Length: 277
Image 1 (cartoon, rainbow, N blue to C red):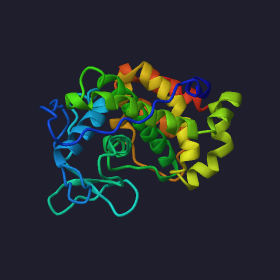
Image 2: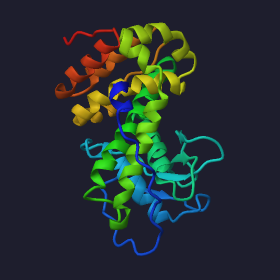
Image 3: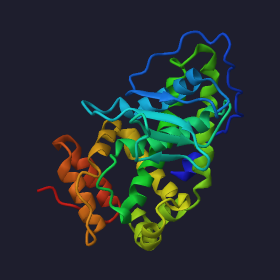
């Protein structure tokens, strides 16, 4: 895939619109959440418009899924999803950005929102790298989908031209994932076997899970309805002896019938095929 990305003509970033004369934002269908904008140095309504657009690229593929209310605020360190609720009973998504850097808001928010959609319980620590890979896939997917959507349906009409910046931001991230060359040469299964121990030690290695995300991105862009499978990713309790193959098999067994073949395809790419009983 990287050779396709390398052929893209990168477009210079268009400055974001100011808060003046933007018109009416497009209403999203996101779950209940609020934005604490104090430390972002941007308006709460603008930040929420971007997060609504980013999150809705995933959320629109979920049906009858209830998640707890959450808060978006600026964190002191990197972006993070807090599993513990705050004093108001909200989950918390922390972002490490500010001003009107909308592409970075979208990238970080969709990543952390993906973690929220994967559930708060039953995390298998050794395979958190796989959830991180899915979250990185979600970030690139959201940015690219937003870029297309903003051509005709931006949050505000004078944000329409910013669509090029969203796509460029995603393209530049993809260009940094040079490990995808090894995946293209020897396959994802070989790449996983080579880096298995490193992934289990450090799940947030962007050089590794970022490269794998480029492979999964093609699957989810072709069949975006399968984003709903995230809600069942951690539905089985963790245990020390669980293999990655078992982890994927339990995920497959938990999803509705229409999603099973998709998860089997993912498992096959990683070289851990699971048979549908």
